[in-house]
Amino acid sequence: MISTLRNMRHFSCCRMLRSSSPEEIFAREAKYGCHNYKPLPVALSRGEGIFVWDVTGRRYFDFLASYSAVNQGHCHPRIVAAAVKQLQKLALTSRAFYNDVLGEYEEFMVKKFKYDKVLPMNTGVEACESAVKLTRRWAYDVVFAENNFWGRSIAAISASTDPESYGGFGPFVPNFETIPYNDLDSLEVKFYGIQIEMT
Image 1 (cartoon, helix red, strand yellow):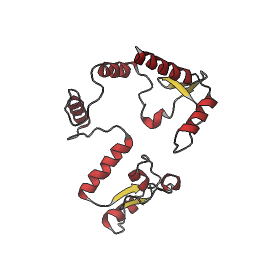
Image 2: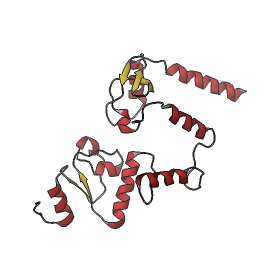
Image 3: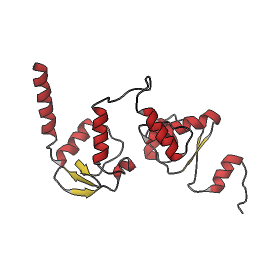
Image 4: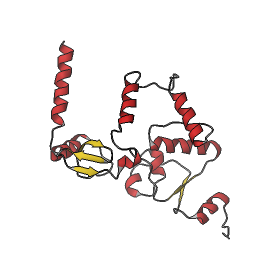
């Protein structure tokens, strides 16, 4: 009973914090959170489809879509239902075990996209880190386009040409090279070590 009451008080406290003004939300994050870049001055509280609402009830189009992580829209009913169904059954397993849905997902992805195998990841930066690891399995140099952004891990900022991203965080991952974006001549020089005439 005591534990339940404590949980209720904690829940009540959390609910109270969510009724804060935008300014209070900005100040709280500035005081307690670490930052990597300055967010837009909007405090969002809910979303549906293409729309998001701030804590004052103002509606916005979400053209950013969490950098494409929610291209399907916010709170899609089928996705919410599937997530709730799975969470009520089993929330998470590590790869130390098999589970009854991963293989089915992998089979679907392989057949859908005509791959040999898939390696699911949680985030974009994890996917790129895995691509770097695959590259390093057979080669030592990795070539990136200038002005890329794929995260804030040490490998991601090692590939960056943005001083705000990599400043003060060295030493960096070795043998990462950058070339101008969409410059095929530079890419050929990196691959073959010579300038080749394009015909």
